[in-house]
Length: 147
Image (cartoon, rainbow, N blue to C red; front, side, top):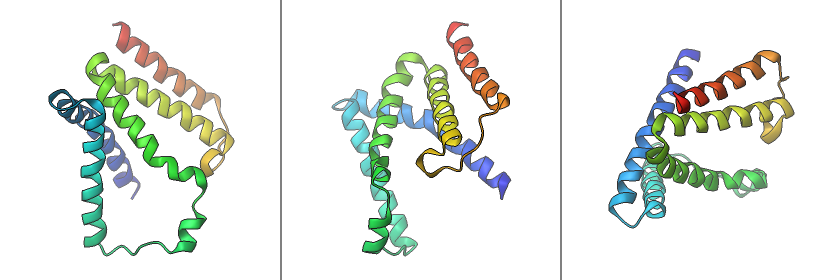
């Protein structure tokens, strides 16, 4: 199970530069970046609707809807920010630098979420090893950008 999760995470990470290129191609050949983001989420919504229907996933009850924390409803806005940033930044900075910076941001926010237990994450102490790993990631992005 752990190996499958690791493979799934690697595949998801590998899809992000491809998604940025696909969205950039749409944006360059149509009405721009915001339209491309809209296409991204529209097609994703269609695919998800088909999957939910095919898997016969039941609709949440009103009680389940009301149990969702207020901040969780902003996830779609986070997705829009990520998709827009990737399609705008990757062609200008290069995929390696853009995604290195994005991954750096993910690691830094993840450290904060783990350290302080934000957003319902289990609280995990900030160790010297975790700090060193984050610093090495930032150093790696700097090296990629400068060399």
